[in-house]
Amino acid sequence: MEKTAINALPNRITDLIGLKKNGSEITCQTSFEILPVDFVHRNYSFQAYIFLCRYTGKVEGKDFSFRKCYARGCPHNLCPHVNIAVMIANRYLQRDYQRLKQAGIEPGNKLFTLEDMIVKYQDLQEEHGTIIDIYDYINNAKECNIFKVKVTLESVPAVEHFANYKNSQMFLMADFLVSCFGKTRHFERCLACYPMGKEKEEKELRVKIANDRLKLLYEEFDKTSIKYNKIFFEF
Image (cartoon, rainbow, N blue to C red; front, top):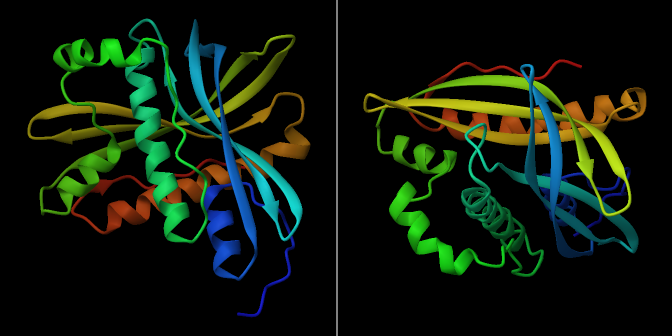
């Protein structure tokens, strides 16, 4: 296969897969961070933990690095509990691993962990029931079950806390309100983020990444009977 010239290094999973399909030699490793983050959302200030996976490696000998947020967890009811969030994060992470492996990229099998997760898992299952995500509803809708999804997009300012410094970021968040069988349920996804104070350099690219991720999800909706409002982040 003739290789396509690399004009830009990858910023997301889909970029890696596209480069591999075009014949590029790719290596890929993952590492994880669970960061405390101070959020300000609709006049509420609260701290949560975000589950980040950093993808690093080489494309045709050139180093690349990007990160993806897989979940947000809180010790209160403003978002999923941190113990639930780690399981949600791992479900989305395993889905991305499968996509990469199907394309011929081997990222490894490491997952997010919390020290006492195995001990608490049984109690969590009894308290919260089976852990599900938005893709469970997509698969259910493929069986001709009609669901409605209301999509809401928000830009949420936050401060990430690292060991020796803080980092102000704007998170591009999507909330999916799923209505089915007389019940409703929220699912949230962080689709991208960019540093505060560097909007001119970073915002356009990160908004494009967030919108591209939305397009992929909407394509999954379109394969089913899901009714939804198709909206995107504005540049």
